[in-house]
Image (tube, rainbow, N blue to C red; front, side, top):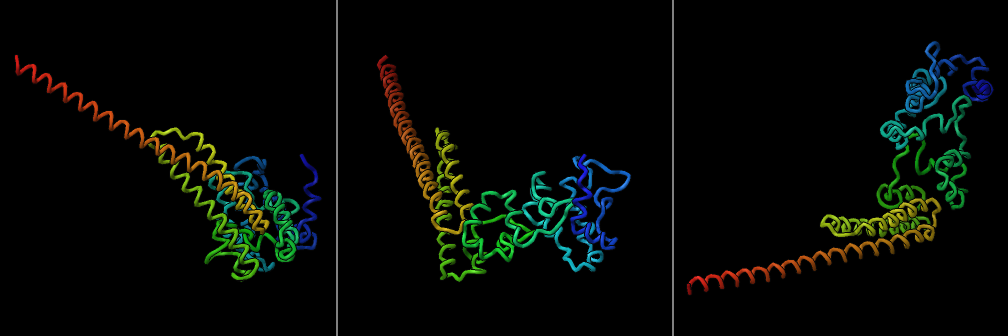
Length: 301
């Protein structure tokens, strides 16, 4: 077992307040219980990933308990609306962020404004790399970086609407006609063009597949177009039009190719139908001729 938990606790907000005489702060038994202490990997343990948010909420969602600290008590309620909670509670994804992921456990300390991007970057590595090279890195350094667009506890699933439209996040800082506004609109337009193209190709390939046409290779290739759509959406964090245009251009090329393959398969279906129709007509004519011949022979007899 580790032996550094006490040392870590003494560096935490809880430990420092306890050392200062505040006995209302969380100690070992508040999180681990007393006689029925369970291993962290036990699903029934208060510190198991799926149960930890409720454990923290016993104090941090208690308005009466937190009144003396003047700390908001909506964190758990906000977290329950987030994509992180959805992954943790509904998909049982134990790697999804919980309270300890961002705040620590024994050494629990709120992330400082200047380090929030690094905290988020422990999971979202590529996003942080792009953001660190973007114009926003310096602009948001003192206001919480990722929080500006994504919030903290109530992180919602990102959408293309964040760039443009009534719910656009960019419009909170950038006028529509400004350089930043134009960049946001350009990125939104590029992503929309690829998304529309991918959806069109998906529809054509699905129609061809439903008719029994061979489009398996095109369907596999279509996954590359969808991967480029994901890359384009990720590249938004660089806040440069050229960073988004590169994967969009490649994705459009692939989507056009797969769409053409689907169209070719549908044309082949039409050719087969025409050939079958002609064949049936000839068969019908032949049968009619045979019937007339038989009738003529029978009438002579």
